[in-house]
Amino acid sequence: MPLVTIFGGSGSIGRQVVKLLAQRGDQVRVAVRDPQAALFLKSMGDVGQVTPIQANIRNINSVHSAVSGVDLVVNLVGILHESGPQRFPVVQTQGAQNVATAAANAGVQSFVHLSAIGASQTSPSAYARSKAAGEVAVMEAFPSASILRPSVVFGPHDQFFNRFAALAKFPMPLPVFGCGLPKMTMEGLKIFGDGGTRFQPVYVGDVAQAIITCLGETETNGKTYELGGPQVYSFYELMQLILRHTRRWRPLIPVPSSMASAMGFFMGLLPNPILTLDQVRQLAIDNVVDDASLTLSDLGINPRAAEVILPEMLEFYRRGGPYSKIQPL
Image 1: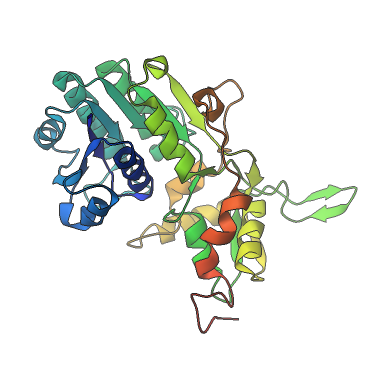
Image 2 (image 1 turned 60 degrees about the horizontal axis):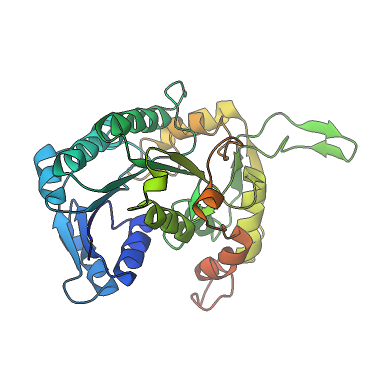
């Protein structure tokens, strides 16, 4: 029975990975900063099968303790915005290096590292640069590691669809970021231009299955996979999708880059911002799978479409749905 350590196992992707590992009979250590907050994961396995432990990837000693005696290691730790000591280079570069180095020193059989589509050392986004530097650090420390780069991940606890669906409950316009200038076409004026930044949403269950597939699989050693769903959407199309499945009507407002930058700057000052200046820089680049990349299909996984999952997933936010007695108009 393999022993697996998952760093960041209490997040939206991590809890899916823990569930799958427990179902196949593995012993699972969930390395998190606050083990008390991860106790809910114990119910995903038999008694004693899933154990939350304290570890902080910024602390190399705690990382070494977390991987001692294990067979497989997964690193899912990442942040969407910086706060206090949680800085992009510290968490997503140095932290990734700490985990990979500790895994190599412990002699683990397999290591899977989660990065992101758009990771590039020349990106205008500090987030994307730190992800790329983290990939380099991982491969230097653990050359046989498997690296997975998902597009925007959707699922019960995601930070994209759930957040905008929650905003749609209020009588206010929804923004469409990344739009170019209005375009005149044969069909008339398109005020949203090309529809904004393009995404290829991938279901959290498919990402988790990709991680499980790579663990202990020698054919994926040293390879990088880009994970995307079966369809590409513009930002405008994603907002329409959310409104349709929450049965709401809200005006959509195109947000040009200059206005988005100002919004990102001021919103970034909030404790849990919906948008930061660095995220605005990310929105300047499409978040889709590269045609030349290895993908989910190379792992034998048929990705599920957003249209199949979202109706049930967004039911909580649906106007007149079973989870709300009084809904805003």
